[in-house]
Length: 440
Ligand code: GLC
Image (cartoon, rainbow, N blue to C red):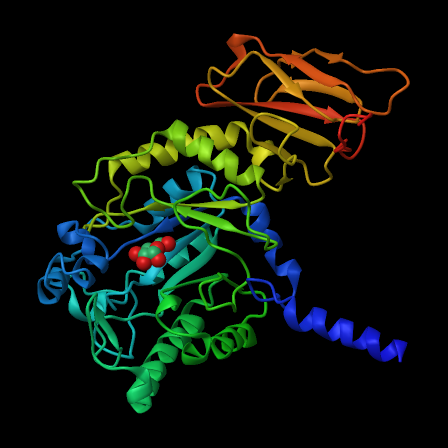
């Protein structure tokens, strides 16, 4: 009887405790991703020709679909230097890149055989622009991610088209839908065979259910070929990691790994009229917040139709690179920092959690405080400089086990122009007091 009850409880737990993202077949495959911290997203497509919103501009009827599609006739990629892209991306400190192999407009960057809507087949660039980029990424030791839109608003067999009109309903014509899915899977197979990406970044899953997409089937065919491929969560519950978009989560996603994707200005693809760039400081402080909460930042660039990366974007990547290389120890291969309440700002921990990194904004107070730290401190220094710092323990009562407050003085002249990182070396793995303050 007891055994049966225990079994029932176990069954209920397994049945209903399905996390928001699918259980990964092997959690270890996420290691490189969690340690990478920074990736660069690339939205490159025909929308860069006139600088209009990628796919959404016709879907939302800002411009007619045929006018949008005519941009393909002027997509020439004449100054495209994939090795230069990879050099700039790598200089930011990023360890992986994710590129739009095909956006919702249906235009493939590679030489797809599934239809004729691709840059090699239909644009004056006349060549596969995806392959040389992937080759350069791999040469440089960066991981390859492919963004692939499940939605294809241009395909005649895809139901969705404009915001307020669709071609048909799946339930009314399953044959037509199956034809679309055959096409979609054929493209996925092409990408799988030609590139075998380390990471799949699906998008657009929201237009259909897991059953309609056959999401488990897509996951299965990818993993059958490459069991260590990582899949983002936009596959109706069959992915490995969560992808919040544009907004830094206040409460971090519960999945083992997560990634915030974010634009540098307000657009994913190149739009010359959008000059609303975040400053390097803003991007770096968002990045610090993200890694403090155990996530990655996937920072987007939108190259122009001729293949050059806009100067403002190169500038941000360079500034980011200066900062990440100075503070690499506090960024890469680190773990989620202290929970809220111990320090006023982002923190990370070394993989063995014996070193705590405190991130301070420029102009931050020169007096820092850490609360509830049980460890003894071995040494405090300013990362990327030879400067060591003293500290003072305040309010430690000899007979109480509650730790005192650690105050650290940071002289103004050691501050980084963006964010200073203080390295706190502990006497062992971090140990925190999370109580209510002794008597209550
Ligand atoms: C959204 C948009 C898309 C963009 C993507 C990047 O899903 O549909 O335009 O490519 O976010 O995260």
